[in-house]
Image (tube, rainbow, N blue to C red):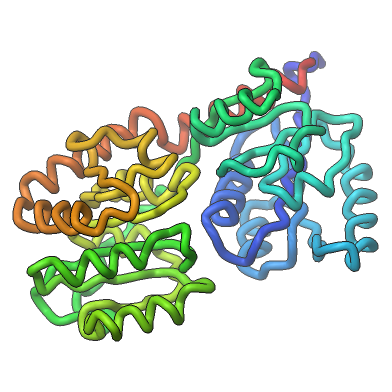
Length: 350
């Protein structure tokens, strides 16, 4: 058996939060790679019932650790022992903590970066995956060898979902529905979206899905702007595709966004989209072709874009259809899985 023919053993390591875009992608990619011939995976992650259930369904063994700070030294030690016992050919880590606690070893250590993280957590790795070309350029400019920096985008959950009842979440019948999604954090710019909504002459209702440290501040802002009847806080939602299918517009008002998997989720679901020109969306979107781009923190321009697409549904649908073409050409599941498997075969043969 040649190196090219052998089964490649991949350790998948995440020490992230219970919920979030990177965490969702980690679960998705491990589960999808489990369908590929010639790969054997083991997941190393924090305890999480839904994630563990997904891996069990995909027949991927999983070991859980606390992955905390210095007080969790025993868990770190046990993780490293388990990693050595698995004897991986490749260790793929996600984000700062998992990467920083994973030592070099008799394997290829690969870090996947979904944002412009501090390079100090990643300098000991052998390869780096950037999910946008901008992140790849950032890594190379920081001094990492260009020949070992690889651009592989995300793909989304391609499960087909049906639109839900438009009167869900106490939404009045017959009104336009705007949808926004993400951690309720300053970086996501939801305060700007609320202020823009307050200036748009429309009866549109905003469904805001997610949770986070800015929740109370955003709820107070809704009261100040007198938007209580027009903003629905949904909390974390599991079927994003169904919400995208239902909404008239998806809006990503982020101040900082590495890739914005939500961008390609909107394209997959053919939901017309407005996004700010933060890092990831600016790289992906062609303004006026597959979505609208507005400047970061520009309330007036965002309000104008919302009013434009609500008043021109044909334009909105044209953008959505072209976004779906963009997804199929660059970000579909089969294309991204092939990029990962080709990359694994290449570096495991070295």
